Each structure stands twice: as C-alpha cells, then as structure tokens.
Image 1 (cartoon, rainbow, N blue to C red):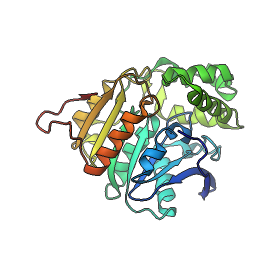
Image 2: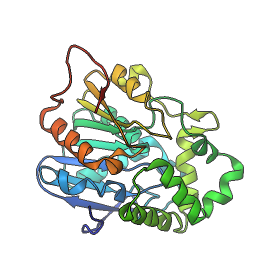
Image 3: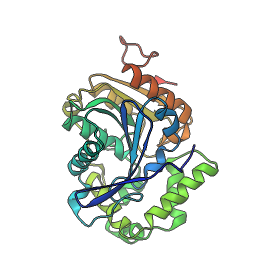
Image 4: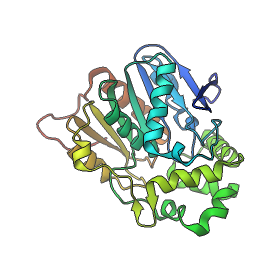
Length: 293
C-alpha cells in the first residue's frame, strides 16, 4: 500500500480536480465517499493497475480538489456530468465504474445516465439503496451541527473514521490524518454540509433509488458489503441484488463501511475476477443469493 502516486490536476467548469492515474488496459474509475478522499483507494491501486488503467479522483469539495460555494456543484446530476467531462478529457469513451458509500450512489446515477459508456458497475457499501443510515450522518444535517462541521475537531474526525474503518495500523492512521487535514481546508465544512444535505435529512437517506430505477441499470453489477458496516445496514446489498437485473452481491467478514481498506486482498480479487468475466465463478446463476465469503 502507498500514498505516493503521482498527482495529476485537471480544470473542469472552473473547478480543479486532483486524481491518480495508474496502469494500462480497460479503464476503471474509483469514486470515494462523503467527507473523505481518493486515498481511501490506496490499498487497491497497485493490484488493480496490474490489469487495468485505474483512475481515482477527489470529488469537488474533497481532498485536494476545489471547494465551491455553488450549491448545484453538490447535486448528483452535476457530479455525474462532472465525471463525464472528467473521463472525456482523459480520452475515455467506455469504462468500468466503482464507488464506495456516497461514491456508490454517484456510480449508480452515472450508469443510469450513461448506459452505453459503463461496461461494469461495482458498488461498495453504496448509499442510495434504502433510507437507513447511522444517526451521526443524519445529525450532520441538523442546524446545530453547522459550527462543528465548519471546524471539525481532529479527534472527532479520527473517531468518526474509526467507526467506518475497522483497520487499525499505521497506514490507517496515516489515512485518518490526511482526512482530518483535508477537512480543515477553508470551505470544506460548508461543502461537506451541502453534500450531506443533498442526500440525507433527520429521517435518513432521501436520495434513494427505486426498484424501477435500479431495474434500468444495464451494466453487469457487483455489490460488495462489509459485514460489520456500522453506517449503512448490510441488508441494502439485498435491495441491490433484487433490483438490478444483472447483479451479484458479496458480503465480506471482518470489514466495515470500507471493505476495500479493511479486506483489500479479498476485495481486489473480487474486482479483478468480476471485471475480467462480468461474473463470479462462485455464484450460482439459478439461485440469486448474497454470497458470503
């Protein structure tokens, strides 16, 4: 695992985006979740780039990408148009897309809006599949939370990251340090609040995909979920499995909301197997059930 990949920057619609671009072959776009950064894919880049061109980016308002005071920047539709412009400027016409948490919700919408461009879709503990979500995320949208979000205490950021990520080692601590650093950049708190309020309120997730919407996804889809996810319940994997026509779902033990960090070897193997064949050897095509590793 490493954090020292060459950083690239691109300007789109007056916003600067930071990204990593590693390997050659069929392109794979990696989209991070709410309040974090492209480094959440650091445990996966080398393994995936051995067979694919792997691009991970900081969304606007995150990591080292631009902050913005434009509310529309944080809508799902704007994000998907932004991602399309981003991939087009990279010279990519067709690609596979993977997203974790909020990034999974964006990946679903991107696949719905660009059915001819997305070869495969991978959802890792994705948002948008049901209303249930941890109360702390719901609390982010409360008016009284604004001062805390605007200047989040570093211990609070690290504690929140530890709720999502089970891994406990020096590499995870470095990730937490970077997340806290990026969240203290000017304007980040306001952007985080705008992003959260686009998808969540006091009752839970608002921006959810109906069975009818999920049924329109054309790309072969792999759903991966951490068995110990504390933020979004694992049963949402079953919602995706039932709703998306060409879908298989895998639950990974000893993993939380970011299994690509907690169980990178297992997740990398699943990614590569699925991207190569559009299916998993262990799945039973006659029995559409969640696979448990």
